[in-house]
Image (cartoon, rainbow, N blue to C red; front, side):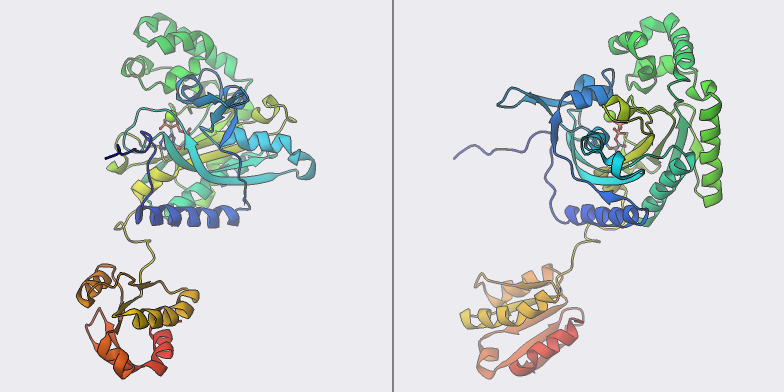
Length: 423
Ligand code: ATP
Ligand code: MG
């Protein structure tokens, strides 16, 4: 026997009915994003590596240890995209979108790849729903985006979450905060992991986001970026707060919120699940303002903001039984012999074209096992075309919910089914 080949570790198959939950989330997300003026982009799965190493930042977890990087047959270094913002900005710059459109709202849905240690809600291939606005600096936009995420979560009936908000400060605010962090961590240097000892020199902000226990302990009481915001950053955060208050969107200020990517330059946010369904992973998504990224990737200076949410984590929080969003089978044809099977196909065809989900059993199995299967599929109606029915040209129509059975002459069957199936 040949050895069975398994899926790549951390890259999962989506199977029904789980896929119907993903499809539901995606459909609702599209609806809401489109309502807020966003339009879909589809960027490639792989990019040249420097897009991410420069875009996301050399000192980040993603770039340091999570990227799937390989050289292709031409010897170029490619990376499977670990996130969607850098590719979106690359496309924005490459297609000179800024010339045609002063404000651009884009969203994307699709797989991302990170070589991570696997846990519940943490995989090596996962999916994100994300959006970017390029070309607007006003903080009311940040608030609008947060309100939209709040609306999406509530639309999905995910209500047990908090929206954590903070600001990491602008590029001008950074040096003072950086100095404060270095002064705080320098005496505790020995308690930090080797990565963070290096970060202390390269990028001390990253220490606050380190997941190593010792570093978390050493970070207690560390300065918050909120204490080092300049006038403009403070005003932006205040605008976000007052706008959200007016929209009735609840949030919590989290002093300690820093995001895992380098490019953020202002208000940042993170919707977090409160229930236990996500285990140790509580972040449903994350986002914020990144006013310097477009320029750093070779485009014109362009203020921007964006976010991404994890599809699998949303699905884990989605209430209801597993089949809730699966398309139900409304009718199953149970047939005896090839003539009956052909008649079943003929009758079901227009109904299927009208959108009814119908099962026709092709196995030639016994009527009993066909009926059992129809029941298991949850079919509301069973159309029985056995030998006596074929001879008398009258089908039996059974309502599986009431077990009530009626006989319908063949020439009325199409019409009756259309009525029963509500089309
Ligand atoms: P974390 O702190 O959980 O590692 P992150 O800061 O790396 O999160 P982002 O890069 O902001 O996460 O990604 C946004 C969202 O994408 C996360 O909040 C999460 O829902 C989802 N996500 C990120 N990495 C994974 C993963 N490995 N598996 C599943 N979902 C993920
Ligand atoms: Mg991460």
